[in-house]
Amino acid sequence: MAASVVQSKKAFFSGAPSGSLTLDSNVTAGNTIVVLISDYGAVPSENFSCQDDHSNTYTLKVSRATQSGSIFTSIFYAYNVNTTGSYTVGVLDSSEAASISFTVAELTGVPTTDNSDGSNSNAGTGTAVDSGSLTPTVTGDVLIAVMSSYAGTTVTINPDADYTQLQEYENGATEVHHNVEVRIYDSTSPDTANWTIGSSLRWCGCIAAFKKSVPASTPSLAMSTINRKFGHLFAR
Image (cartoon, rainbow, N blue to C red; front, top):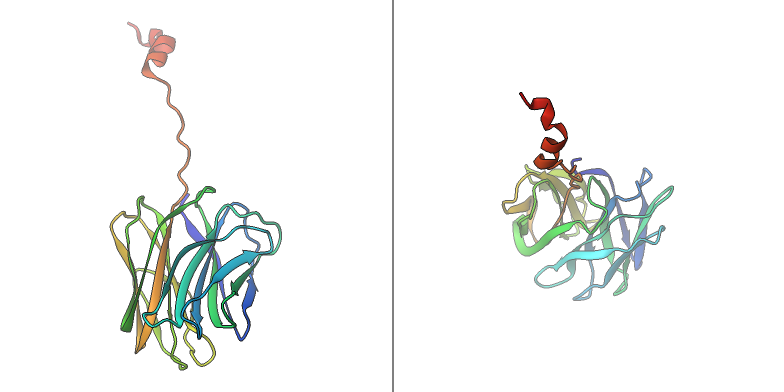
């Protein structure tokens, strides 16, 4: 079974230490939930955490800040989730009441054990944004990436041509710039998620890889067993 994104949804909150969203469809038990965060704040470091209404555990996969701080990007995930009915995910910033754009994505076709397969991040200034390079250990990974910037104005964000955009916020007057893109990557060569933004800004980006499920192999009968049991059928 190929790995894929079942659904995703975005939300924004400001002036409060936490916010949440409820996915539009019920989540399938055993799938993986990924939370991708873009934050603009007034402190040089942030302390994020994620939780849901089914008591699943979220692990920080990768995080990055711009070179002078104040803009932050993070990716959290929970694998083999327990769930029945609707599914609400919350993001908490215990450092301050910041402004946060975030996306929640559900992945299917991934193992029910810890399925992470590497991550990376990058930060810079300009119109060319990237996540840093990542090298999967197996083919068929889900590569999911997020970028963040902030300017107080609307900025066009163009995703990588090799990726599919899941969610975005471009209006910096009301949200933190935020773009999430995904790729099913049938290679173990290095790959980097890229974006182009319409103005030169400080930015940071993160990328994470999640392995696809591999079907259990069916044991084959040893040739000696086949010959012993059925060899007489081929005897002349």
